[in-house]
Image (cartoon, rainbow, N blue to C red; front, side, top):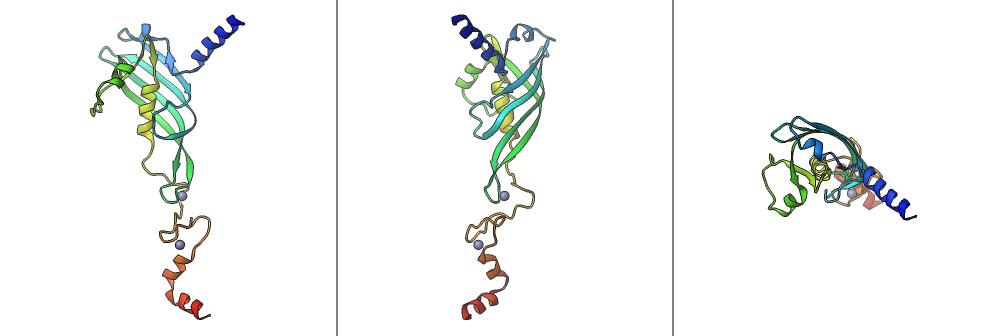
Length: 186
Ligand SMILES: [Zn+2]
Ligand SMILES: [Zn+2]
């Protein structure tokens, strides 16, 4: 039983495909490694995601840094910019970044850099950990505005009614004030 527990723990660490035991390869210039990504979205994005992030990233040691190229897919849940309704937005991300073999932990502990050219570190101890890279790519790919449907009618600015679901009285009043007067008389 002890042996089985140890095996399943090993398996778990392998199926969490953000960490790859390829550092001994990629540390050498001109060496490359292809990494599959299929894992829960890393924490700390500030967004709600539905399902995992999946894709492939190829790492190449260019001699000056680590080039990361590939593709990632994930689904983020955003509130509609007009009616606030939460809806799924698929993200299809083309990866083309320069990374470094610095330790993620050291980088996170240090002062936050405003320099966008600063390469993202991908090392966690003796393994390559893509979670910080993936986290940053996901944040950058979330659109600032999103609609639940292209012709979303939004909320009434006066009464807050969701105009996709029903029409409120406010709109009619603006269109034809005489109708309201007539209604009052009746
Ligand atoms: Zn909407
Ligand atoms: Zn209204």
